[in-house]
Image 1 (cartoon, rainbow, N blue to C red):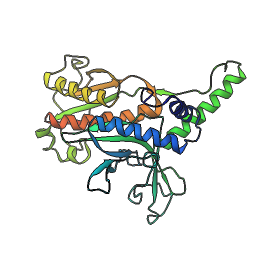
Image 2 (cartoon, rainbow, N blue to C red):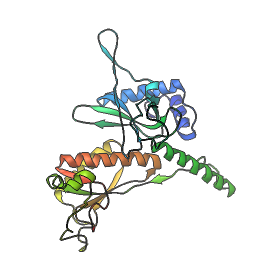
Image 3 (cartoon, one colour):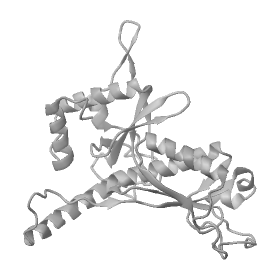
Image 4 (cartoon, helix red, strand yellow):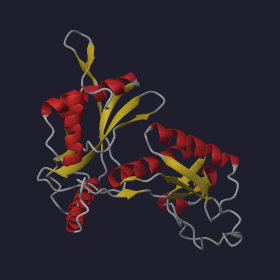
Amino acid sequence: MQKRLPKAIYKSLVRTMDHGEPLDPQVADIVAATMKDWAVERGATHYTHWFQPLTGLTAEKHDSLISPDGTGGVIYNFSGADLVQGEPDASSFPSGGLRATFEARGYTAWDPTSPAFLLRNARSATLCIPTGFVSWTGEALDTKIPLLRSMEALSRQAMRILKLFGTDAGVSRVLTTVGPEQEYFLVDKALFYRRPDLVTCERTLFGARPPKGQQLEDHYFGAIPPRVLAFMAESEEELYRVGVPVKTRHNEVAPGQYEIAPLFETSHVASDHQMLLMETLRRVADRHGLKAILHEKPFAGV
């Protein structure tokens, strides 16, 4: 972004990111045009405001970057207004009782501190813009906004303590970091679909204990099976492409259990990347004839 934006525009964006200054509409237009050019150069045809409602999953609505030009042709168009705010239907998302169902309006708002990324499939690419999700009266309807608010509150109080001890010289804010380790099980798809409990809730509700569990301690840090290693390698390749800094992979304690761990990042970025990581594991596992179960203890006795 720094290489593509004019110096004054980049500095204004950094002030918004670091100090919460209001985003000038003209700056937003230039940033949006730059993001659009970057995405189109890499094959993007659509953009989406990528947010995290109270479902434990991510949500997205794709809009085309292509618009009619009035002369029978098309033009790529993405304005600052498109970047900064979206309006998905919020009536079908959980709200914790904050509002009635008929109050359907909800807004997505761009989080400039989280990097945008491209999600690709075989036919196209989509520019994904991390956003918060709020009701029309301002209540948070997602998990990102409470996290950002808690980070800001913690920074404010940490700065107060630093000033009390006289160690705040050169410090303007305090950041928190997270590096979540994701454990998961891999099960052959043919075996997975023979278990209604696994299909329904991704854990066993009945059945005998396995003849071999983790008593022998031979699986932990053991040699990774070739089929699993191929899955891991493809998953990591996709994660690198969207900016997730995965670092470590290894066998976990239980048979069929594995772990992937990223480098530490600022908490809200790490949270975004964790959601991407889980989605990627599920998607890539399917291509390898496997099912990825992200619950750490889905089997009795393990």
